[in-house]
Length: 124
Image (cartoon, rainbow, N blue to C red):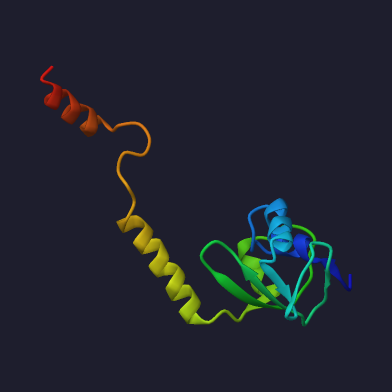
């Protein structure tokens, strides 16, 4: 195998959870293949560089192997070298921590404690 569709490779190497997510990322200009915005059908080869933007992280990957099938997490080093700067991971960690701090109460069903507080307020 000398080339693979980029959406299949991104899914197979667990950059995106589903192949349709990888396809949508390509269509939404979130994937760059050797500096050019990639279509889902773009063919990649060993030695190519890929920049993939996910929700909170922009990853820079150097293709070291090709696959069309989903591979285990332990084998990912056979398929790409992660060249993402540490500052990118730090920014993603910070976004996650801030999301926890600023999460709003009242989303979803009331908890048992919330129900007791409501009952106490209503004087039932």
